[in-house]
Length: 178
Image (cartoon, rainbow, N blue to C red; front, top):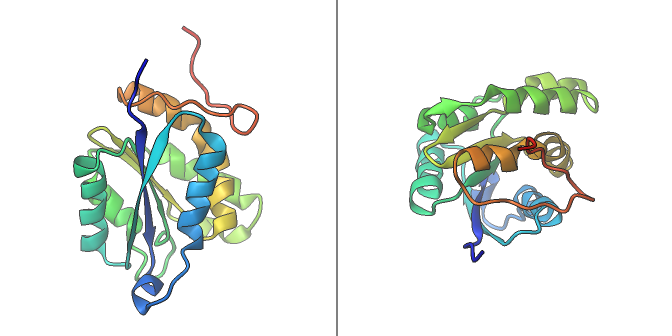
């Protein structure tokens, strides 16, 4: 079966990005984690934008509609600060929300820090794309992805997206037995 590589959007939301030299450790943490999980071919489609809701929305729409990413993973902008608007941008561009992702990520993060209740991560569906909001800290990114990623390949299957194969010694996706 000759399948095109899955396209996965990685969107870092940070005002520090527009301040000149900026090393995006969070975006890199997502890419590194996905590289450790996935054995099927995939290509990252990376974007970096400041905390501005219209710009975040435009970028999510472009990643989903133009770049045809089956999965878009965001980092940053999920806290309670006034500039943190990633969840609002995600909700504005999605057809349907998937609240279980945020619930599970917060529950997982609470094992490590009591301030996890301040996080507003969410997830939603835009046409053929699953959008998942992650926190901004690289350590938290891995913890949250470890919690929710087992459901992501099957979610993408249900949306008739590319079949994501994983290194099951690293992460075991759940797919119901036929």
